Image 1 (spheres, one colour):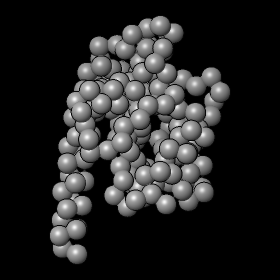
Image 2 (cartoon, rainbow, N blue to C red):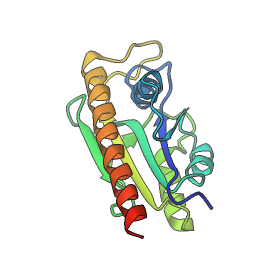
Image 3 (tube, rainbow, N blue to C red):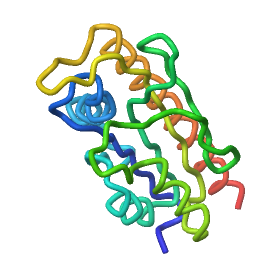
Length: 165
């Protein structure tokens, strides 16, 4: 069982497929800023790997690219502990068993972290060797800012809970 205050950020995506790299770019930018409020990891999004990672923390933030038909760069924040995953395609998986399936399976097994939040960034170009598009890169910056604010609020709530106990 994970520590009750452990926080993990998981950037999901294929680093060789254009906008699919969005989740990993968020993780890399957090690492470059010497971010220390959570464990920050990157993965290509294979479901069993995600399941194993999610079991290690009480609070998990998943960041992934998606395709839903919204304009590129659109950001969706979904608290998966209170909502179901919206209709969209997450990542570009060649094996077809990725983030959506991992979240669904964890929910069914009762192993979804106490708090699990998804930031999904709408992508446009998932071609092999393509760079992250400027619109998605700007959305990556916005997600990094949102995560930093959300983790500050998490820390403040944790300290208030500890001091009032």
